[in-house]
Image 1 (tube, rainbow, N blue to C red):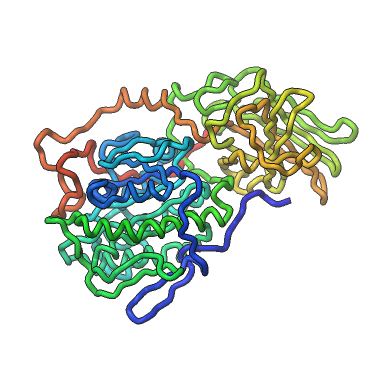
Image 2: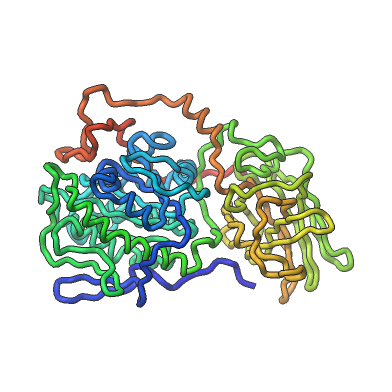
Amino acid sequence: MALHRILTTLIIASSLLLSSSNWMRPLKQMIDTDPPQDTIKLVFIHHSTGENWLNDDDGGLARALQENNYFVSDTNYGWGPDSIGDRTDIPNWLEWFRSDGTDRYMDALYNEGEVHSPYNRILSDPGGENRIILFKSCFPNSALDGNLNDPPTEGTDFTVGNAKYVYNEILQYFQSRPDKLFIVITAPPLIDGTYAKNARAFNNWLVNNWLADNNYSQSNVAVFDFYNILTAPENHHRVNNGIIEHVIDSSRNTSYYPSGDDHPSQAGNRKATTEFIPMLNAFYNNWVQSGESSSPQVVKPPQQQEEVPPASRAEPGQAVGSMLDDFEAELSPWEAFNDESDSSQMLCYHSAEFAYNSGQSLQLDFAIPVGSWGTCTRFFDAPRDLSSHEGLMFQLRSAEPGAWMHVDVYAGPDGMRETYYFELEVPAESTSDWQQISIPWSSFLRAGWEENGGQPFSKPDEVTGIAFGFPEMMDGVNQGTVWVDDLQLFTSLMESAQVEEAEIMEEETTAEGEEPTSSKPGLPFCGSAAIIPLGLFAVIFFNHRRRSE
């Protein structure tokens, strides 16, 4: 039996054709630029350049997105936990996507539904999380020091090598979330030509080599070269005659569309909107058609984690926010069942041998011979409506790899109960560290021994129980020990913890009337006259996480 995760051999940076001085990269043979049939939620991480691009009276991007069935939200200065929205330079993407705060930032980002720029909503919120994430650094990030062909080099300076390193690092997070589509918008060009050749080289690397250099085979990451479009009228990144073109007809590497400073003009922004919308539709359709857009994730988290604030913890055995069970109760509501007609063995109990965040986890000991079964089940006192969330998530650890297990959800009352399951092989990495398992509702399938076997789960509004099961293995006994911790729903934002944190945080603001400083000495600041950024420039380095054992 195979893990229900669809891997694809399509890769957005798959093919590079050289024709004269034009770079042309087909996404695949037949490009589908039709907009989504259903309204899709999208969020854009940006500062003032992105604000102007979205603006109904400037670039018109927000309106064009909505006309193509994308429900648009965005972030800006002062947004989010720790005012993370203040920090969108290339080194800051490590803080967003590869730091101890990533889970909090992403939870807030996926659930963001507000307007933070001058555009009007013409669509109704379809509900659920943002599925598409656009993110862009501002024009100071086109001033990269170093040399054109510098390899990725660990560090967070404004250099070609360090920028490549940052983008390579954040791919690890993107790989863990195939259910989200991440689109890099390259930083716009500067008027000043000091670093212009380096900017060109770096952005060409992003478009043509980044994913291929990392052997990235998933279809949930794409690049749109905003920079190239703004360097000359003849330069494009677009769909043309059924292929994606990356056209560089001019050797110009500086801004062709300035607006009195380095912010792109309305003409430049409108050109970018015209070329981006068909590209986005192509990226989205390629991602959906790959089958990855609803696939579950097996995630190896960084090895050091900040302590969970008390306000976000569940009472033992109860659900608070997204937590269904943290296994801290003295008496366990979980019960073991097994085939009593043979030698199968199934035990489950709260254990302090390993724990993900606190004192206990759920330990499952099993030995299942051919033709037998065993489960550890928790039935709820009444049906639970979990439909506002996208699926189940938990932490998994094992004594040895190679075992197979089920995660089951039940719907309906006793006597009419329906069983849906998802099957996975216990990851080898779980023998040395906790592994995060996230499973969307749509990946649970009706049990084959029941009516309509194989049908996807469609009743998250009436969940009556959850189980961890262990099936037979045709080549021997399925046996071992696994530990499960922090069983939760993977879309809920634990607001109580954020409120508590916000109360003790010291807010740092720019003095009234004081001009904000650039992210790099001597470079213009990427900002809006109407917005003063909160907080100081900061880079959070990725650290290994600790686990309580």
